[in-house]
Length: 397
Image 1 (cartoon, rainbow, N blue to C red):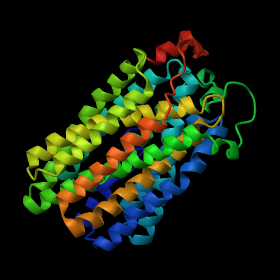
Image 2: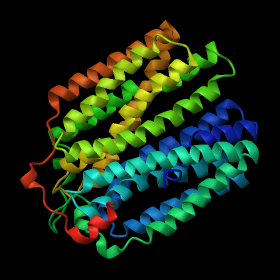
Image 3: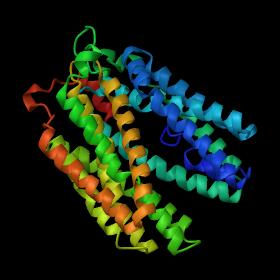
């Protein structure tokens, strides 16, 4: 599912520019359509996953919708069709992450969730690495169309595999963050929870300080080393994904050894200003790739710990998947602010100042989280056992 849930991503721009010879403005409109649709659907998707008891079908159907949209774009690459396909991709991609996390919680229970999520993210990053390599080889040697066919193949395979999960193993009340058969927490009371608001603000600040760093580094490389920028950026993405695999598994081990969620997230936040400062001093492709390894640490931690903190905060509320939607929306807000603000700072003061501005925002994120966010890990004796320990353990190998 790693190559499916994010849709075509940057490969669509490659297809539209290299194969269809679209103008940059039209490509920007097409790329924005998916992002806007995904942002608009985050909260409805979380509410849907919380309520639905057909979570396997939601994952399978969303994957097949992405496959259909990819084929539509490949066969009819005109602006209205591409925008429609991108809207479908954005909407479907908003459902898959919370549905997978809900299935994980409903199958293994709270006690085993940290380990399960760390393994999920490890497999996700490994899948992204394999998919990126496959897309690069097929797209370069056979043609751009194979980018779409590869996503379709993974989508069909993912839909088939997710339906093999035994529905009897899924505790749907537990999967939405509840513990008893009762109505979920009213939305007004949910948004009055101070710890949730602090967490979401921290997510916005994390991505505010992080999201624009790699695009700015790519612009620096394009300016200083024309022709080497694409290869260096590909190396950045692949190297970071490999680091994320190890980091995701390490986070799971750290939580099993009793290290708190707050301390782990603080490590990710502490990495960001270091990365921004280092970027401000180099234009070397090798240096940029080496510094980007730190993004593997920060993003690898965030991918695991954000889900676990959301599960902790929503314990007993029945709003776990809504919280995931709110988290994803916060990611989008932070990333948008990062690219917008960094762009104007660079335009006025240059790239080094742009990186230092992002580093300063990252320091603010670190201080804010350290001061205002409580530890969310439950006491050892307070964590309820998995509802089905014998069979659930088989799924966590």
